[in-house]
Image (tube, helix red, strand yellow):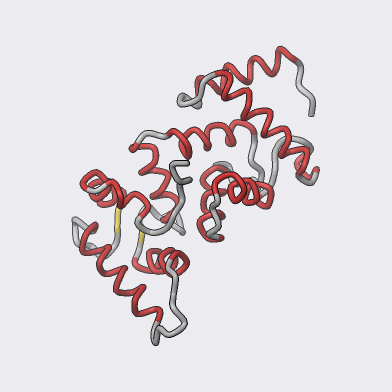
Length: 194
């Protein structure tokens, strides 16, 4: 849906405030990209946004993100109201965290990706699911799941500070602050530095 010049200016100003990490001209570029993606998408959302398929293709093409489980979770973190449609606000604000987020914002984002059922914890089962998809398993491996189970135990030993057999956000945050590389411990959900 075409927007008046005044309407677009209001949108740009509003998004420049809410997506703190982008300049005004960057926000303008992201809105143009959004419009292009909406035009490419099926019109089921009447120009209000685009769906999971367009979103996944975009993340794959722009950032080389390929893990299906992770891409679905990233979509869910962007699609905060769970409509199946990414709006322009969700697009710009989501990318602000994905591309320029502070460590704090990225910890919350990664935790939400790994907390598959949204219960506020990363359970052993969730770790297993995430790691199972992000490991390269050799065909000769007798029991590929055993290696994944070992990794889950290692992760728990390193990150489960309160020893309750699952990771709360507090556990995750403490582990990541001690060792930043643990931010993506259960699979790549941020674009690489390039």
